[in-house]
Image 1 (cartoon, rainbow, N blue to C red):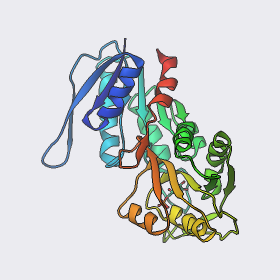
Image 2 (image 1 turned 180 degrees about the vertical axis):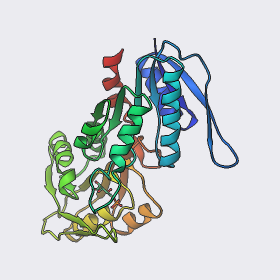
Image 3 (image 1 turned 90 degrees about the vertical axis):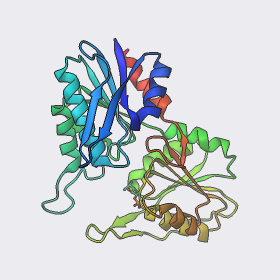
Length: 293
Ligand code: R5P
């Protein structure tokens, strides 16, 4: 039997996946000890079961990851058969290269630890670079939320929409969404100072008068990347400026900064829970999980 397993932090997505797949669900009891350590307990037998373990990993990426490692390792030790880890937002996916000598390869280490904690499969959504999953010890499935985001954008009745990718890494997603919307699309160039974190975006001449603009990225963290593009779009005469992404981390005052930079609306998905979670990735994850049923 296949069972969806989740703790309190992942209840919304876990419940939804179980309902849509019409399979049994099981909760994991969890609490935090006074010193900050995590306590977890399976509330039913897992011996002989195939498990889909759902773990939201933001905020508190480190805590959520270690809880996931405990859960996977214990499930195997208690006799679970196949274990599929569903991590909608995969933390550390941006540190997939050694940009400066001596840097840790956090993304690769997360992959190794998932493997040694006994995950047989990993399902994630719009990972930063899908090639970064090649080093993972288990089979990985990266599903994309872009068609779902495009469907949501259609409902906004945008005027002559123009999709902007803030950097080359976002270009393929921007082209995909633009093709679904029948919109135009362009890609900016971004440089990040690896020491200070400062982001520079090359200025571009675009005629956006009378057009609504969607700035599309895989994730929005501090919002600086979006603000740089939004300022250029506003100066180029854009109407509405929508910042859209899969993972809306929205750190600190990101929302305020983006609004001050001309952004009129922020659209994200439920891979990370926030006011911007307008799109559910559940249908895309469900589709990928059907192959295991
Ligand atoms: C990096 O290239 C990512 O695709 C995003 O552009 C980046 O993480 C966004 O970060 P921030 O919102 O802090 O500019």
